[in-house]
Structure formats: structure tokens, C-alpha cells
Length: 362
Image (tube, rainbow, N blue to C red; front, top):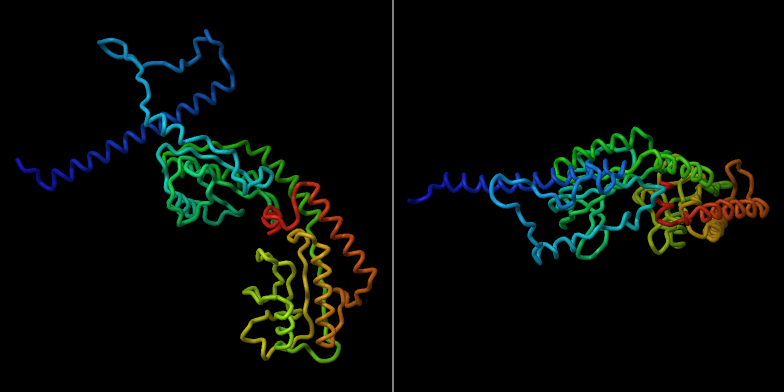
């Protein structure tokens, strides 16, 4: 008898339901097993204790002989060995600065789909939140984006705990944990939430350290008589290797593209490429963000040399915020401060200008 399209559709739908139920049961089994293991770890029981669960327990059957545990197939062994337990943290993260939640998925999840779901779930989170997936084939953590096509059994969410706005709060971690649990239920995954109290304590200590070394050095070049013409100012900046970016400032950047110091307008108007021809300003400001640059003394000396070059070429003077001229004594004092603060950062394992420093001082 011929099978109608409706019957074929019902058969296909039934297959999908069966697969879904199988995956759901696996997720529930793994979830309950983790909960049981967590309870057992709180109060270990002896070998003969009635509360001890047998690892090799077999389900009872009605009638017939007791079942015999079959040996795993070669493919099952291969699959299990491929899904190795990943390192605790991706190398980009730091336990002092990040609260990392590891997640085990029963069925592999597509990185891009997970990222997109997280972007909707955690839209507006106060701190930077990044996602990583552990690649079994390359044995490393991959940073996930909306376009990540790989599939992963292990993923982790990393909330940055400290930035220039301060440290994360207990409410921030509680809100993130609840949202992660909802996401994991959708993807049939199991999150391992670390203790929040210790993380918050480390974050508060790190925030105090950052506040103590967070300084910026500013130098002004002001006009003596006539204002500075925008075309000449732009020419001098570009000749010195500075680049005008979208924030309205000229940036002196290193080989990696990280800003070493910036040149901004002393007046409220931003620098815009199309408007530089008609621009006239009474002064400019050069700023060095000390924690965000490596070898701060060298960068400071380069900035001061460029400030003096501008003053000589434009007929201006190099002054501080009080319009007092910069002398050798002031320059020496600032150089000593940069060495002191960057030395304190290095002693605490935060290299000035490093990726960790750039994240903390952002």
C-alpha cells in the first residue's frame, strides 16, 4: 500500500520527537548525576554505608536474568577520549579579573547560535561578557562570535569583574547566574557556577589596586598670539606618525595599533578631517594613559618631544593645566611618578600595556 505524504510527515515528526526525548533524557541523567555527586562530596560515605551509591548499579528487570554490562564499542571509546576535559581557563582570562562559568553540553552546540542567544539574554549587562568554546580537535579554547560555526561540548562564559567603572557587585553575579541557568535549560547543558564570594573579594582587591595606579599625564600646547591653523596642525601630526581617528583625536599608535598618546583639541570642538582646513584653535592637549602603555617613561619622553616640536612650529608654548611652563623639574617629577606606578602594576602581575591592563583600564 502506498504511503501518503501525510503519513511520511508523521513518521518524520515521530523520529524527531524520539531523538529529542533521547537527548533530553541524557541531559536530565547528567544533570541529576552532577547534583548527586555534589551532595556526596559534601559528606563522604564509607564503603559499607547504606547511603553510598554503587557506580556499577544495574536497573532491576521483571523476569529473566540480570542484565550483563556490555563493553563499550571502539567508537564510544574514541568519542569519549575526544571529549577531553578542557583547561580551567582560556589563556585570555585571569581568575582575578574574570568570573568564569564552565558549561557542559550533552549534545554539541553551535558556537554562533549560543553567542546569539546570549547576546539577547544578556543585552545591557554592565560588564564585558565573553564566550569561549573548547575545540576537541585543536585542544584549545576558541573565542566565540556571532559567526562561529564550530560545535562544542564544553563552553564557558567569562564576566569581566573590574574596569574603570569599578568592581562587579553580588547582584551582577546573581543576575548572570540566573540567566545562564535559563540558557543552559534551552541548550540542554549543565553550568558549573563557581563561588561568588571569593570572586567578589578578589575583584574588590584588584579594583583598589587599579584605582591607586590609574593616572593620566596631560600636556598643553597653547598659542601665544595667533591661533593654530588646522591644516598646519594636521600636517605636523601626520608627519610625526599620528592618525586622526573617529573619536576626534590624533593617535600615536604602536605596531599593534594600541594608542601610546593622543592629541586632542583644547577647545570643545573635535578634530574632523573635513573641517581641518577651516579650523583655528587656541591650543591642543597631549594625553598619556599610564596604565595602558608599556615602557611609559619612553612614551612620555616621545610625547614631550612632539609637544615641543608643535610649540616651535606653531609659535606656541608647552604648559601644564595651570598654564605654567614645563621645566626640567616638572618633567623629572612626572617621569618618577610613571616609573613608580608602572612598577606597582608589574609587582602585582599586571604588565602595563598588556592585554589584561587594557581590559582593566577601559
